[in-house]
Image (cartoon, rainbow, N blue to C red):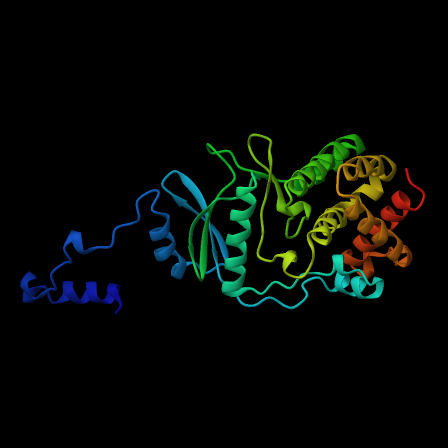
Length: 302
């Protein structure tokens, strides 16, 4: 019913008297908004109204994030990396299928709880349904988090020393996950966030590499994923010094993980000769930079 037309009609026929108009609903019959802290109710009433798959909301003084089950994702989200994985026979860099839908919601909730139990900084699962997930924001007291990708971009503009200082924080954050016997899902710089207290937190767990890989493979994949997302700026700014930090970080990890990474360096030799031109796309440039850095760091050492 068009409420505006209904209002106009009421004014035009006011002679019929107020008694002919429908009685307003009693106040106690109107739905009340969920109280702060009633996460399950907030999820229940907000989920059907949210159009985006991921959105932030205010619940009292809290900022929360609501993820709803979306359509099934394509089998391989990163075609260039999938092609490189096939040609190099490197399963550890092969993109992991993201099932989307309710399966992705269940995976994310499980992984967040798993990593939180290991003492890592991840969003808290506040409420869960089969088709939706409500999680906390990693900010606090009105202060927001900063994505590591943004910090790296800013640091790169300030010079190699600043870039390497921030990049090392990412290396340390990945090492902190592995020392607890855990792994990430997509260890790209965009999925590492600096919390207001300076601790690096982790986000985005809709897929789980452990469903198709061993823990050793998952952890090697974490290192290579982080390198993949940062290789272009490192190669342009400070490849030699970055290699020293890379080996210092890897010195603390499982020997099998180091062997997997060294094997990746050997099998990706051919990718060093990929065209550098931008016309081949940014993903091709990233793969080329990864191959060239791994070759520099693992063939001749640093």
